Image 1 (cartoon, rainbow, N blue to C red):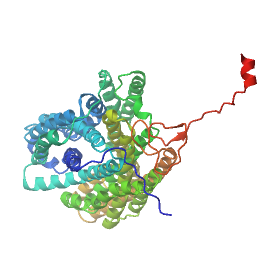
Image 2 (image 1 turned 30 degrees about the horizontal axis):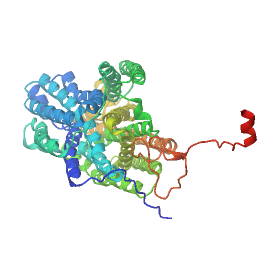
Image 3 (image 1 turned 180 degrees about the vertical axis):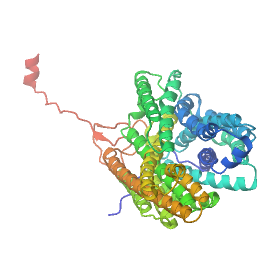
Image 4 (image 1 turned 180 degrees about the horizontal axis):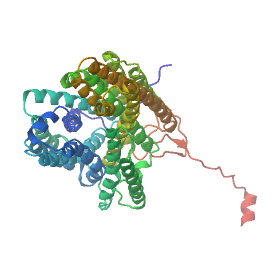
Length: 557
């Protein structure tokens, strides 16, 4: 039977001005996501020009993500208090100025400082953008469509960043990769005051300043420990202690938020029973995305032997499907499909994508591209729907904090995906290399081959004759085997996530307007009906009183 379309309009529909403002708000989203990968091809040129040490080179890459992840919660809460448009404009100015400073940096220290300011600017732009979308689109159907497009653009921005980086480096100097940001930020500063109205909490209360260092001390050690685990391809004592320390401080931070009226993360956010599961499911979706990217990028370059720019161009192919998946999932839900089932189907689709990747051999370009496209489509379906659920379920005055929690969960999920699945693949790779090569190489060369596939390619290039070919073939086969095992593990995680979505979202109604939800068209109503925030209407439990008789009334008197 064809489901009856559900009217979900909860407010006035957005017009041309709001959609134009939405297009403008896509600029910071694309730039922040692109800056994650924009340095991929600039590293050799930066090394030649600035001569950074190995530690400085790591910080050039990592400081952006650390500043972004550590300040998301703070900036989301700050935007709710001082105004999202004001914070967006401040972040755009900081992002543009830091981009110029990074482009013309004359030392590694200057570049690290500029990347840190870029991360701070990104932390203001991301939650402000999502919160403003929540306020611009009061109609639920339009908001779901906008968030679907938003999720697809964020996923495509990372792939686009690496391609633009390769093109710019090929024709200009390395600093040009940062100057891409400047015209977009100038356009943003010019158009946002004209198109986007200001939104903020009318009664914000005091700002909980001591929670700022607490949130940093909770987030950064965990992110660092997970990234270090991914880089080392295994768990070591220092990253493990860092993760435990961050979790301990996080428990203190959560306790403080639950006991203060001026908390950065208001308990009001969790009144809707779907908000917490949405955060967790969004983190699992990012887990799958980053876990697969860890292998596919290396596969295209080190297994298939493609150049960096060629590999980046091939990686754009799955983005075609990604651009359709988010809005399509929103449209299916708007036509009456159960949200929990569509989210579960998205996770299952992602698991199928992982399954296709698990079939890849050492010469399977199209298998990898098809698997990546199927995986990305399923994940974007999930991300668009759970983002709309989380943002639509909170009161508008808390939209910035809700967006910051979503994005912080994404940072955790992405780091977990690279750390856990990367460790699984590395363990298989090392075991296969040790078993296959054994004593066939000098001890120093064997140790390098044993570390990573990239090191194995470098060693094989130095060896002559059959030894080099055998080393390269063995390393590629071992990496592909590790990728297959890790993709199998990723598929199991996504199947478990689908079950989790069906269980936790089973009784969660549509987000609806705050604080209640209108009955659906055609729904039976009755006297005494009441609603809860974000839940479907239920009858009030009122015990009927027996009618009073004259005799009982007289006896009471």
